[in-house]
Length: 225
Image (cartoon, rainbow, N blue to C red; front, side, top):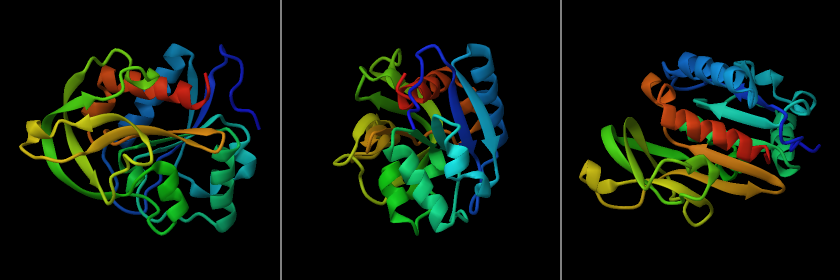
C-alpha cells in the first residue's frame, strides 16, 4: 500500500479507543475533538472505533494512519491482527499513540517496540513545564522552547531516548525532581512513521489548542504529507 497520497487529500485515520484496563474519562472528548478538528480543517477524517476485531489487514488497507488513543490493557488481538498492524506500518502506514497507548499490550513486545516504550508509573499530576527538544519537527511547530500544562505525567519502564527521536521532555525542575523523562517522540518503523505523545489524560488537554496542533501535525506527518 502507499498511504502517502496527494498532498491535498485528507488523511484517513482509524482511531482505536478500546480499553481492557483503565478507562480514561477523556475518551469521549478525544473522539469528539479529533472528529471535529478533521471535519473543520479538511486535513484528515476520523473513523473512531471500540471494536478491536475491526483492526485487520482488510480494513487497514483503507486508512493512512492507525491511532491508538487512550487504549489500555491486553486488547484481544489475534496473531493475524497483530501481524497486520506491524505490516501496515512497516509498509508505509502511519501510527500514532496518545497517553495510555503505552499502557497497552505489555504481553506483545513487538508492540512495545512500535510505540516506543511501556508505561511504568505517573508520579506527578499537576501543572508542569514541558521542554521542546526538537523545534524543527512539524508536530512541535509554534510551541516555542517550552510550555506549561496541567497533566498526568508518565515515567516509562525504560527510557526510550536511545531508540527514538525525542520531541518533548518533562522539565523535572518544575515538579521538584531530577532525571530524563521524554514525553513525545517519533521514530521510523520500516517504511512507516510513528508518533507518540504521553499527554492526554484530561479533557482539558484534548481541548487545548496547542495539543490539538501537535496531534493534527503529527497525523499529517505520519501519513507522509
